[in-house]
Amino acid sequence: MAGIYDSFGFLFTQASQMIQDHLRPALTELGLIPKQMGLMLLIEEQPGISQKEAGAVQRLDRTTMTQQIDHLEGAGYVERVARPSDRRAYGLYLTEKGTRTVAELWGHINSAHSDVFAKLSAEQVESMKECLHAIVKG
Amino acid sequence: MAGIYDSFGFLFTQASQMIQDHLRPALTELGLIPKQMGLMLLIEEQPGISQKEAGAVQRLDRTTMTQQIDHLEGAGYVERVARPSDRRAYGLYLTEKGTRTVAELWGHINSAHSDVFAKLSAEQVESMKECLHAIVKG
DNA sequence: TATTGTTATACTCTATAACTATA
DNA sequence: TATAGTTATAGAGTATAACAATA
Image 1 (spheres, rainbow over the protein chains, first blue to last red):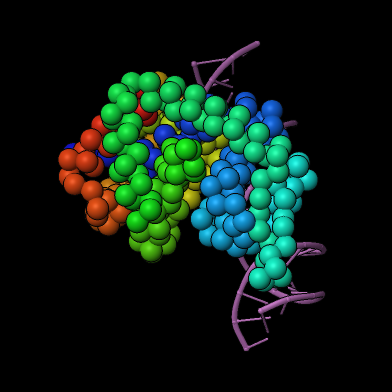
Image 2: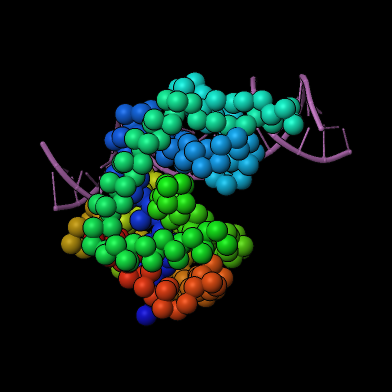
């Protein structure tokens, strides 16, 4: 007997929103929206990534990318650095402030995980992460 | 060493979008958006649910609910039935066409699950569902 | 007085089109 | 000719405010 709680689309969306709920106060304090936090995490992991490449990961149009990076640059979190190899594209890097902020954000992220996954064991969380990696990383 | 792939918010969002990608052609064919499909699944599971109650589950404002249910009613999938006990509220029900359509949608949903979870065992999928229920159902 | 739902309106978010500069 | 990025503009989606009907 199928019901909405058998739909993984619904379950993933709800779980994602619960994590966002926990992060909202910290993000508001920092003047960030979830999408912008995601971009900072991505730049942390792949320094020098271009706007187009980052947009491909986060499913953002290049015009939307320009707007979001404008905001992150204006706030002093991210900088655009010219690529000598291709002067059409920028490499994106975290500033010192951005690096400090991402470290702070990871504290909030881990705290959100703890709260949202309170009823799960560490093994269950680790197993779920491995499944999600298999799904997302292809 | 933390990276964006350690963020469950990111992982849940990506996984949800992958499922939506698989459902998009079928939903377009039916004139539905994912949100409207979710409402139909919810009404299937809780016939007679009010617009306010459905909005609370799907995190939709009551004015947005009016618009979405207008669309579902106009398309012949859902009907509003007066509640004798409280004539301010409507009970939402699937029409015959809506019931047939939801059954059809479940075929597409299960197919999407199969594709997206291709690298996972049945046990892993079942275990992930149990974890998500513990998270979402509280 | 509070609540369910509707309508009209405004705001936010994202994408489309046209442009500049590089390749 | 194609591509990375920007700018100006339009569109989709959602919420706010004011309203009617009911509790």
